[in-house]
Image 1 (cartoon, helix red, strand yellow):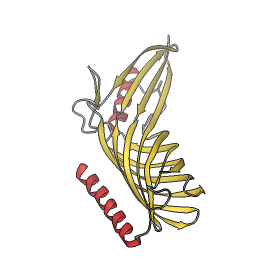
Image 2 (cartoon, one colour):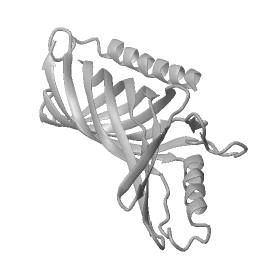
Image 3 (cartoon, rainbow, N blue to C red):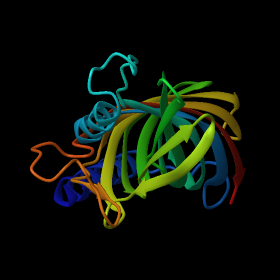
Image 4 (tube, one colour):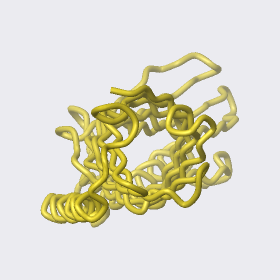
Length: 252
């Protein structure tokens, strides 16, 4: 995976250098280009077969007949917010190149409630896939108010957590948290469009692509997700994701 990411970023950099040499024009924006910050909303899909298997087992322990907890729980899509910075964005003719970094908050929550003879039980499950990302993108101006990000490549570093909390008659019985042994490395490859509201200084940027991440298992001191002997992974791959953000820039 690391080799694929390095090769992708290397190829992106080569294309940028070729574009720069071909255009041989002064750098756009300020003397050193453009810097700035951004904030936006993200949605990311994941395949979480191991986590879904664990959730179903927990509900089956409480309700072997399957007649009390009737809601189907399946983790598959996290939503949240992204904040970050364009360290530098420079133009060479029609082409532009950016280096960026961000932190993204992603969360997915499910709960189900069952009425037992003497007590009401509510099971709450939450998966957070917060992560850091650093990356490069290469794009081209289509016309005065619209740019196309031809390619974007990012390295991502996830600090995932899965939480299971039980409520008895709306009183928490405590939350159990599960984590990978260490932060997990992944990568993102995508493309997008940039709509210039005030050209180069205020813009709306949309990005779509695939986030690749694998987490073999998550655990606490006593329990492992998925259970020992399972052939599934807690998170066995990423999937399509999209972000829309507002950029604010200033010349360097």
